[in-house]
Amino acid sequence: MLQVQITQSGAIAVDAPPRIGGLRRASRVLMRRRIAVAILNGATIATLAAMMAVALFSGGVSLIKVGMWLAFLVTLPWLSIGFWNAIIGTALTLRGPVPDDPLALDFNPNAVITTRTAVVMAVRNEEPARALDRLATLFDDLVAAGLAPHFDVHVLSDTNDAAIAAEEERLVARWREGSAHPEQIFYRRRTDNRGYKAGNIEEFCSRTGATYDFFLPLDADSFLSASAIARLVRIMQRHRRIGILQTLVVGVPSQSFFTRVFQFGMRHGMRAYTAGSVWWTGDCGAFWGHNALIRTRAFRDHCTLPVLPGDGPLGGYVMSHDQMEAVLMRRAGYHCRVIAEEGESWEENPPTLPDFVRRELRWCQGNMQYLKLLGLPRLKPVSRIQLVLAILMYAAPFAWMAFIFLGTASLFSEAGSFSGPMALGIALFVTIMFMTFAPKLMGLAGLLWSGEQSARYGGRGMVLLGGLVEIIVSMVIAPVVAFSVAVFAAGLAFGKKIDWRAQSRTSRAVSWREATIDFLPQTCLGLVLFGVFALSAPQVLPWAAPVILGFVLSIPFAVASASPALGRWSRARGLCAIPEDLAPPAPLATLQRRVPPL
Image (cartoon, rainbow, N blue to C red; front, side, top):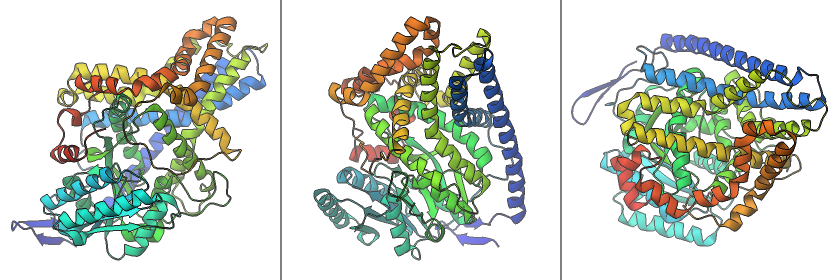
């Protein structure tokens, strides 16, 4: 049935729900795409596995070689899916929109908003002034756009530090006093922090599920423009089967050199990767836990997370709640959709290498909890695959380190580690390296193809320079992070775990003492590997150099990349600049005046 509404200007806005025939066609298209992706990845994994088998087993089979081959197999699914997502995504980006795409989320941009939405920011021991100024700026943008009557804002505090909690309450009270809409600003602090952030959101939905059609969860570092929010709402009003909807979330300008380099690579790498992923995941899209519009009643009724049995690191409350919530939403019959576009949705990224590693370890523990959730009944096949990939994302670093250690040990065995043709070994190495960096390389190719897009980053020359710097930095930090994740993942089996804490979001210097404490094991390992290869197999050194250099340089890199002086220098010269550095949209410019980049 058509929904005909009159806008404030007197224009008629017609918003018709999608036809059933279109949904069936979309289902058939998705099935064909998923079969194609399965074939591509299956063939790729089989080919690489066969190449490594020839390289390892030509001179005979040993337990060490079998272990190396099995470790290599564990790394392949994540490697392959990233590669093909990037290839597909780049092809789609260069081709442009497809006419009459059955998966397109069409909507009327002039449709009247008839729903109620809660904008909720979950905080726990965050810096209150920055978090609340960010939320107030977002609400002010909604007010300026004439959308305020459709939105309330809620601060959901899990803070257990009394001083921070008192400051939260004081700042919210001051915000209400100065606002023209105090009745739409709410603050609630939980005294029982069960379930971490997910429990905080679940408790909110159980209290307000009948009040709001949608809710928009934010982290303390999140921000969206009013136009981006309105677009999500209008799409959700039209497509009533969507339970979770989001666009790409991108980084905000930063003073930190580490953050600038990281988010430069993440920006174009994620664009290519996500475009390819969306092409075949479709209604089983991912969820990043924030900056997404969610159907409140569906979330309340179907997305409550189970408490896992046991008191070890994989038991208790689910830490990586986002993907599980998407899986449960899809199981209930609702769609989880991602719009692979930059839609004025922002977040802050870790400011230093130690902070980045700590976040990875928390995600590692959370994702490994999915091992206890794979057997949930009635999950969609694609959803179950996504959980497996989320596990392999953090099992792969462990397997990579195991491959390196076993390969080193094989130098002292009679068979040796490599007995196949040298040309095969070189081809395998080059292939793996290319596939590893494919999302970033494809994203760079997409930028360089378009002069208009390159100009947003300072021109093709700056894109090339930034891409070169980012790839070098990625090669340095990849083995460092992988080693930390591998050691932590191994420790999970012996009860090692981390607690849910507020993330560091402020640019800061890293002392030599902190860097040494965090990365001395990597440094020692790099020196040992260099010595072993130099004495026993010097021909291996050129191929092992990226890993060895990453280990050896970990301490000075952690210090240098967090240097405030280097951050200021890179920003002044536009190195690894993102579009918001050069021309921030008006809502973000307003935010930066109230909450300056750190």
